[in-house]
Every structure is written in structure tokens, then in C-alpha cells.
Length: 293
Image (tube, rainbow, N blue to C red; front, top):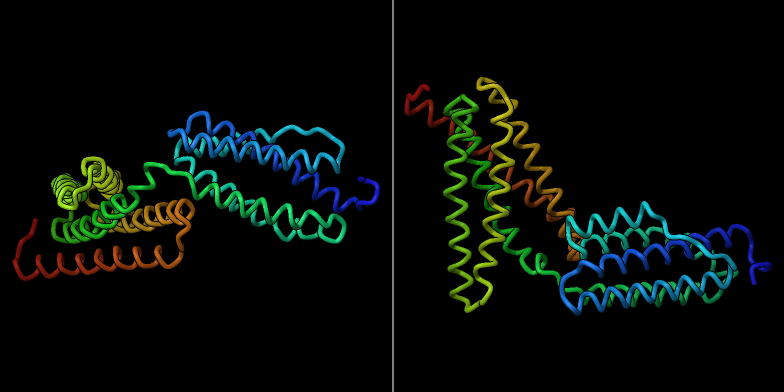
């Protein structure tokens, strides 16, 4: 079978064969710690199908292979840290980039196109069946994150010019941030309760945790810089805002198949715009109230 296949095509087949085996092992390992019976069954099914694809390609190469340990470690660790849905969809997204290479097989291995198409369609359908708790509360996390970015970034920027001391800004921001965390979490709880949802406590927990983490990250620059270095602290805070938004937007874009660019730009422009406006408010407040600290 392999004699009629060119060396270039055979190299592609070998790569596909090893990828199938590696992904089979990843699905199996993730199934070992994934929560939920249905999730485990779906992941094991994916593992078995990847193993079957490996056997198809082994028929052409005639060789046994071993999984890529680095890739197995990378995605199993990502699944533990960020959730298995994110890790596995990220893995499959990476494989789609090789589609052009796989298409080169069409002229020599006619069945390869059908195999690849069936595989991608079936994997997409099975991955859509995964039900992970943290993804059910992405809306709650977005609420906490976006509100903290807009409200606290604006407050810290306003405090910066009014107080002109990074420690005082951090103290003021911490008081405002913690109070707002409880306020936002309790509002989410009451809102969920009024809708008759049984997961109100969990929903408010995700909102509060997202808000509190954002508070800590935004206040951190004001604790790291010297008391008189307010401008560098504010600029670092603005950079932190961009990093937080980019990281969270990328996570949701992969895990929930949402657009990245538009959501990233929207949240960034709103958060930084409010911070700039609040900085101007701090300047005006200090000037017209005549307060000098």
C-alpha cells in the first residue's frame, strides 16, 4: 500500500497517524478527571475514535508510533487549570490549521478527504455535547469582570490625581473594591432568585470571585510603585486592563466559539475610556474643591 504513495504524502500520513494517537491519549487522560458521567463517556468515545483513525493510517505506514509526550502534558495540564472544554477545543483549533497540508493527500489517497471531513464533523458534534460547570456561568463571570473593570478602573484613575499617593489610592480602591464585590455578588444572587433559579448561590459566587480577582489585579500596580509614582502606576493599571480583557476574551472565544476581536475591542474601549474620563474628573474635583492632600 505504501509503495504507491510519494514520500511527501507519506510524511503527511505519518504526522496524521501520530496526531491521532496523541489526541486519543489526551482524551483518555482528561476523561480520568473530568466531572460528570456524560462528559467521561463522551471523552472516552472521542479517544476510541481517534485510536481507530490511528489504525487507519497505520495501515498505510505499516509502523507503530508513540504519542507526543509534550503535547499530552501540555493539554492535560491546560485541562486541569482552565477546564477540559477550553483545552480540547484549543487542541482541535490547532489541528485545523493543518487542513491545507492534509488536502495534499487527496490526489494520492482518495479516502483521506472523506476521513478527515467525517472526523472533524463528528469531533465538533461530540465536543459540543460537553457540559462543564464553569462555562455555564461565563455570563456571571463576565458581569463581575466587566463591572469591576469599568467601576474600579474609573475610581482608581480618579483617586490617582485627587490623592497623588499610590498607597492612598490602593487603600481607597481596596475599600471600594471589596464593598462593590459584596454588592455585585448579592445583586446577582437576588436577580437569580427572582428568576426562580436554583443555582443562585453558585451564580453569585462566580460573579463575586471574578470581581474580587479583578480588584486585586488592578490595585496591585499601586502597591508595587513608590507612593509618588502615580503616573507609572496608572499606566501599568491600564496595561493590566488590556491583559485581563485579552486573556478572558480569548478563553471565552475558544471555549464557547465566540468572536474574539469585536468583544475584545468593545470591553477595552469602554474600560479605558471610563478610566480616562474619571482621571479628568479627579483633576476637576481637586481644582474646584481646592483640596490638596
